[in-house]
Image (tube, rainbow, N blue to C red; front, top):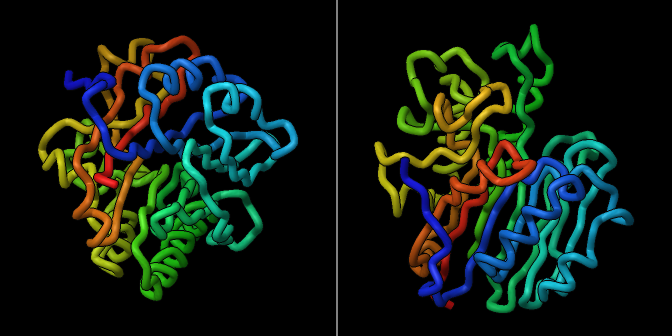
Length: 272
């Protein structure tokens, strides 16, 4: 297996995205990760907590004094925590039902950072039989309309809940009919990427068919032995910003930590 450990030689601005699947329940591994890797900015999805109950003290103690939260009780929720100043920029309702699935900020250099949690879409890949699947497709379509109008340097990160390439899943053939890898979802994500010539930083630095999974189901008794992973977590950038990206890492070992999320962190370093 390919696992990318913390690399103390990294010197640029490091941005991490992680679906933490309850930040309060997993605060111990979040603190461990921040101590070991020390990213400058951490984008979390599925925080599952209202803003007033977010464990801010743990982050402040580690130097993450700049915080923007968009929480929701028990479900969804996104957050951006930073050691560099950030200014809240937007909270877009791409789900069209006020679910807390997006928050955006501006960085000191003027780059926008957008953190998104795309709906999973249920189990049946059919809009009529499964309204959740239709909501997911509509969500990505609204993102695409937003992207078409975007006119500033931007980084888009988060749990997209879509694994677009054949090499992004453990078995392309077996997962073609499984939500997250169906052709209709992949086509929707491809339209989003094409709408602003987004650079997929993961695949920019680790071209297919290189291993790059970011999610493994809790259903497996031994996730590493079965290794039925998918690349659901992504970090994209507009062309100008992508040109300043230097490295991209996936921290697969975090899936083996105590009380892990089913997702692992991803990180890109930028030469700022």
